[in-house]
Image 1 (tube, helix red, strand yellow):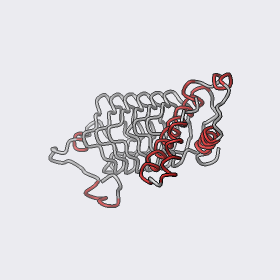
Image 2 (spheres, rainbow, N blue to C red):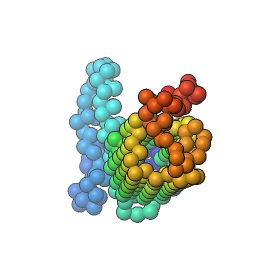
Image 3 (cartoon, rainbow, N blue to C red):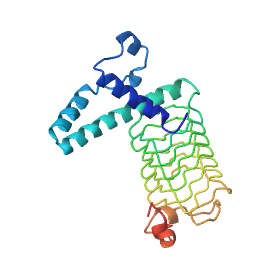
Image 4 (cartoon, one colour):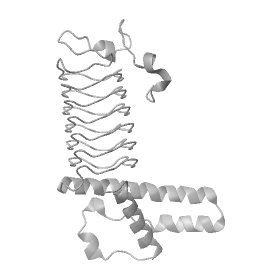
Length: 251
């Protein structure tokens, strides 16, 4: 699938359906899962047309924004439906997509490319994201129980994300922001946390091993005091921003 192909297809369908003042036959619509139904944009498009005709630029832009938001939500939810029911989207290119709030729970996006993707508020619980790539993406999302083995989160923003019992073996978190992320019960064996921010992260029952690379570049040992990465009041608190400064978008 080409870059954002699914999104552009949905947008073209939306425009074609609404501007022609027609609708898909109900029998055809009923064959699609509920989350894949074409959003009703007739009112928003009508308002945009009226605002354009009257020269009200602000109202016009506001209505266009509503249309894009609705299409984005339909795109994300439909993508989830397809990815849950088949392997059709394994390895898909979703770079630059807006998947904010999308329901991707249980989806199979193994090996998918998600550069610069907005996943804030998305549900990725128990999704198969093994070897997926998330550089510089926003992921304040629910990743509870997800398979993220060998996934790449370089420079990603995961502030406050739920990664409870997630499989993060071999994952790469170079310069990622994991502040206040919940990693309760997660498996970080072999993960690379170099330069990652872990302030206020929850590490209860989190599994590490001697191949886990910590934010300061050292390897985890049974004697490692992880509080020096999570607790700013720790006398030996290690803050990647003191080293990276303006070179990190997460500082």
